[in-house]
Image (cartoon, rainbow, N blue to C red; front, side):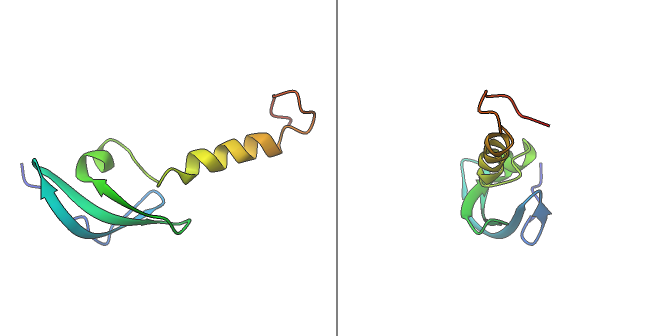
Length: 77
């Protein structure tokens, strides 16, 4: 199975940069997230659906908390 070079691709919130290593058949790339964080991501993580550095989950939690105006733990419309 041939792995194509993913450098330059935008995948979700990540911009894939240069390949940094190949280890145990996995290709690892530098990636920069829209929030500014830089991560190392493998081709397998990309194929499995990783689309951000992790900030997206944090952002979703902050939105839920912000929308809980009653303080009852439920998102208020």
